Length: 422
Image 1 (spheres, helix red, strand yellow):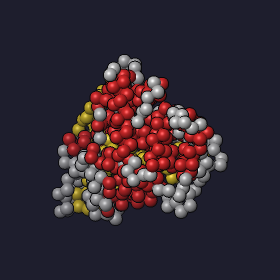
Image 2: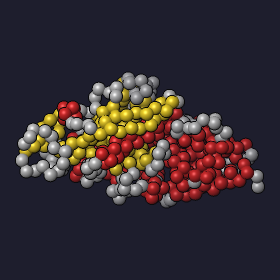
Image 3: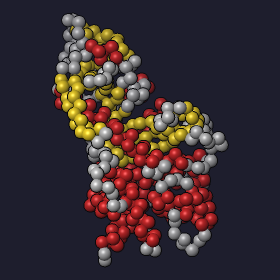
Image 4: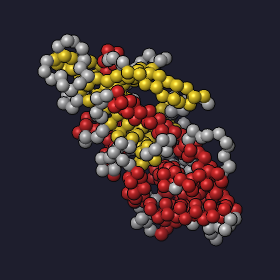
């Protein structure tokens, strides 16, 4: 067997094993729908039903029959297809999660500015243009098991126009609880600005989650001032002094950052050394007894210091740098949603029914989940797939783009040679 044929056989076996892991409990028609929709989405590169149907093999039926079959499964709101898939997905990523694995929480948008008749359209802020348009909100949770490979563990759309929608904070709380229930409490929650709402922080403290949250600066905190008059940076300060309410930004301005840190980054094709200063101070939330730590980092050219609130133990400068690295890895979720919006064209959804919208989002997440699962479990096969796509010689900043291109080329080769993919 030649090398290209061996590669196609490996991809077929691996994709079949992946589908067997997530289609447990599904009926035969649903398994066929899952297989066809996933392959059609990989080949078409956009969640448009007619284009997905055109990329499927004939199988002795016409194009209209394939299209109608996919549409009927997408719009069927009487089955529990989504729930069954979500119960089997954790078996793929939970074994990869350790106690120190960042669990990244973020909010994104599914902008549909020209849509008028789609179900439950709400007003969202388009992250690309900054304008308020029609669309849906997306709650995203990724597990960063290694550098530049965020595994999507939960991504669900919601709308404030839905009947009985509890609101943004309850949706985020329910999503985080579900993920940490799957992981048995393992992982460190990492959230950007906007995740410092008192409702969210109190729930995460009640559930005893470990988290790193960036503060906006207007959050009121309690800082312990000793008898000398300065803020205390150790926990052995309960003898003389008191907790004083102060805004986070004001406390950050008064916190000494006497330790230096350096980080090498690649900016616009050039390697740049970024140097900053770091410090920390003990704080509490109003009405709470837990002692937290606010890590303060200053960088040249930035007027406002970065403020990170964490439950992790910070006793040394190495602990403070570890907290800072947790937040830096949060950027991987931005690359993840970028892959979904550019590689899979998630915002190109063209359906009117809410059930079909949620189901197409789930299928798009399965595509990215398969790519990230390949990188972790089959590194040799990943390199062969990337080489099959004949990439440019430059080092990629994000590996999943090359892997998606090579996988699409390999599946197209299977169809061109009239070989059964599965």
